Length: 462
Ligand code: ADP
Ligand code: MG
Image 1 (spheres, rainbow, N blue to C red):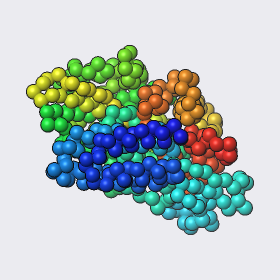
Image 2: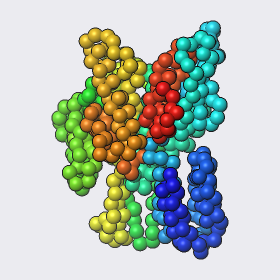
Image 3: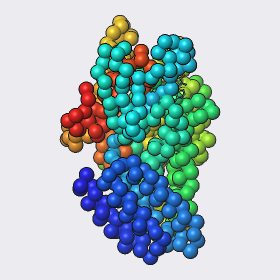
Image 4: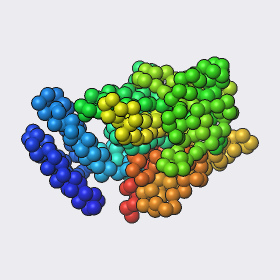
């Protein structure tokens, strides 16, 4: 932490020199921000918001604007540094509201989970449970009353990071019924992370375009894939859709924009049911061979592609809920940024980053290996991939950078360039507040603590 503070201090000095002439109080607020990081991370959240407000004010002032444009990138660099300070891997918990049907039951409204402080979660009422009283601490805790908007406010900085060229991923982890899909997808009238992140992405991109220097043009390309990992096979839900719609449905479009990018392959007619995960030999960039990558021009198009992928998940599956609890679904959004000199056709700078939003398979089966045949096999695969994910995150938190076991599962292999390094990771551990779910809830919270930063301290429970 001290090293980081020293680094931040250096950054601040740099920012001071750069922004001095703007003289609008920004420095003071940056300085305050830095001081506050010594105490609480929470304060930092507010300060980051403040920084954005300052940015907006600068943008609104035409006189300052051209000077601001020159400095905007430095400002964002600082912002990313501060996000880094909060930790490359962060763990949130979201507690689902109790189900209505249970209100009539004896332990109805009585929830055994409590929220003593902002980032704390405690378990009590031990009389009726044979588990010891426990408490857990996370980077953020969302209680049953927290809204989709509140949750997304904490996710949105990652979208900014992706626009700035970083890879990021957001997971929803938890037992079946704990609210993973609610958080990621959400009901139609109250959308979750998938939709809000894509809306946010396009509005940030629009803003960035207007911030280009006078002699520059910034061009963004957004490509979407919808993947499912089921029994250690990567399935391409968009390709499956295309098969149903007829083989050439979108071929013209994807052929034209696949020519210029090394890592992007044109799709062929291979089976979309078991795709290979590849690493770009030079950049290390991970991609799925032959996966459909739909180029989308706005949030509405992106939403439509997501809906198509989701619909496809149901095809050939007798019970949607059963299936969805046993596979991981990955919404992969790739962003290619090119900066051109006005009048030039070759980009002078180019970057590629991605945002992966993942609704994980239900974690409960990882604990109880039971059942026979197909069910047993599914259980083993989920067990394998979720524990591989836990192991990878745990290893990253312990800075054991040489022995990160990415290859132990398809999931971690797919995410190997988005976990660790400069990438930003957010895991939302979903839990149910109800008594009958307590054993699973405790397991999930312990999992979150293990993969989270705070688990490094000796007094971690479990
Ligand atoms: P999972 O995907 O983890 O299996 P779901 O997201 O399907 O769980 O949630 C289970 C049920 O609980 C659904 O009916 C869902 O609408 C409801 N639910 C989950 N989280 C919330 C929430 N925060 N607010 C309201 N209802 C929720
Ligand atoms: Mg679900």
